[in-house]
Image 1: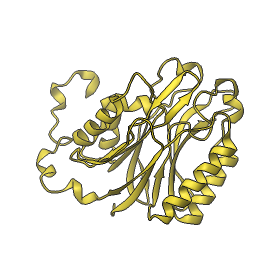
Image 2: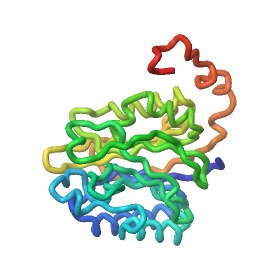
Image 3: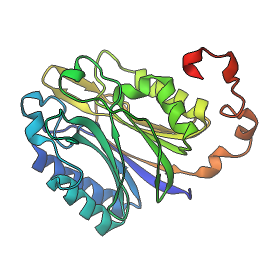
Image 4: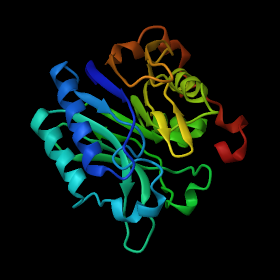
Length: 268
């Protein structure tokens, strides 16, 4: 992994308005590209809005032929820009969609698709949970993705780190009264796994939810690279530098120094 600039888009989403959200994503991608970013993050379910249960199946897309996914892949390829974005993905006919976050690489390929594995607040009635947690190779290096509630379990980020992730991106629709949770978790996940973490959340209101922002980025020592407030739409620009994993952090060796034989059997 060589140093690069990432853009985290803390914003709102128009429920049901896939075309409008796609156009907003294009504008943000073009702006970030003009400012030198080569990776951009949008929140969980950004492309459709989160509270869309009555039209979820209608708005879901397949990875192979979804029109919005295809358009995003073309835009990524055009601008040599990687895009991390949330949307409902239909993987099997007759099943429920997944709550997914895609990593579209700079050449327009879908390098990875993370399907939310841990269901929150009745999400299992809407979505099929994902059944694997793994990192994947990208033009930036090995990357892992967490979808909102997934990041509240330390085992998920640890699994990604053990699978070689050098960068963990988390996209969320975190709401009141859970302010502060995700920023704390993302800092801890960075420190305990010695990886960069990028976190992207909504702001504003959607039906009964008030989203609480606090998008952020941390280096492998847990030092903040950027932090947003709870109300404003904002784009955070951060430099991800792999050299931050070197030096004193080598002495910590959290992954190598684990004593698995002492842990609960379910953690081995």
